[in-house]
Image (tube, rainbow, N blue to C red; front, side, top):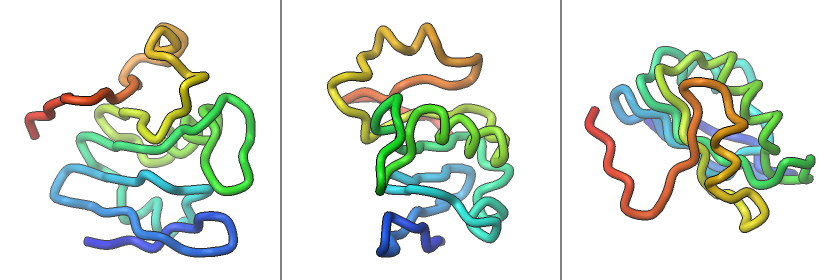
Length: 106
């Protein structure tokens, strides 16, 4: 199910595929988008930097979105080189950083 998501001044799509939420280019999630993703087992979500960005979620903003969606597990993607996998230790339980070759069993 495609879900319109703000990406700066334009709109892109996130997708709900069964129990998977896939949002890789969001700046925010309006309430209707949050409702569309609530209850997913896994939420794949962009978290570009630790600091705010004009068209992408920061780590803090992505954590806020995840808290509102309440997935079983959240995986950050569309991250920059300044956010290494070592940063995963700083994230709350149930939140991690996606990586090339990651396989999910849904």
